[in-house]
Length: 372
Ligand code: SF4
Ligand code: SF4
Image (tube, rainbow, N blue to C red):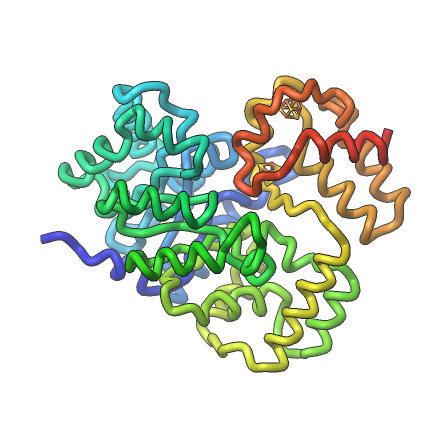
C-alpha cells in the first residue's frame, strides 16, 4: 500500500544540507554537523534534504557520514533530487540515481524531486523522459514519493502540474520578502499549489541568510520587538500558511539549528504588530535596491571565467550597508585568484541557471564600474 506523503512531513521542519559548516582546512566540519543532526533528531525533527550537486557532491557524503551511518533507516526521512546537468539522455538517469543511493548509503529515498524546474530545464527533463523514469523508480520502491522543486512563474507551474499529475509535492521559494515579489511570485505559486491540492515544501525561508543579516534600520525594527531572532520571524511568517507542510533550512552552524528548532517547536503565530514590522522591513529592502541573490551558487558551475558571482554581488550589496573600504577590500581579496567582474565574456550561461532570474551580466557590469 502506498504511504501517505504527509506522513514524511509530520515534523514540519527539515535540515537542508546545502550550507554546511567548514573547517579552516576547507573540509566539512563533520563533528559540528553530527551535533546539528543529533539536536534535530532529539527534538523530533527527522527530515533531511540533499542534492547531488550541493557543495560539489560533498553534501551527499555528509548525509552518509553524519546521518545514515549513525541512525537506523526508520529514524529519518531523506529527500534527494535529480538535477538536469547530470544527465544528457534518458539512459543516464538511472546511473545518476544509483550513484546517489550509493553515496548516501541508503536503499531508497523517501522523496525524490525533479530539481529546479523552470522554462529552461523542464524541456530537458521532458526530452529525456525523466518523469517516467522517476515513476519507474517509485514502482520499484526506490523512491517513496515524487515531486518537483520549482523556480518560475505561476503559469509555468500550472503547465507542469497539468502535464504531470503524478507530482505529489512542490518545493518552492517562499519567505516574507519574496511573498509579493513579481519575479519570484511566492503568493501566486502558493495559490496554484492550493488549487491543485499539492502540499508545499518551502526552501530559502530566510533567503540564504538575507533575512538574518538585515540592513541596520530593518534590524532595529525587529530587535525592538524583543520576541526572538531575525530568523524566527521569517519562520513564523511561513508556518502560518496551511498548505505549507515542510520548511527546509540550509543551516550552517549549531546555534542556527538550536534557534530554528526552538522557534518551530514553540511556534506562535505572528501578531498584528509583528506583521506590520515585517512589512516595514520589506519596505526598507525595496528602498535599498539590493541584488536579490540567495547565494545558491548554481550560476558559478558553468562560468568559463571562474567568476565568484554571488560573492561579488554580496560586495555590491554591502556597499549600501557597510563602509566602502570594507567592500572594496573584500572584492580585491575575492578576485585575487578568481575571475573579476570585468572578466565576464557575456556568454550568458550563468543566467540560464539562476533561479532568481537575475540579469547577471548587467549586474556584473555594475560591479565592475564600482570596484575596478
Ligand atoms: S556571462 Fe559572464 S559570469 Fe556568466 S557564465 Fe558567462 S562569463 Fe561567467
Ligand atoms: S546569481 Fe542567481 S544562481 Fe547565482 S548565486 Fe545568486 S541567486 Fe544563485
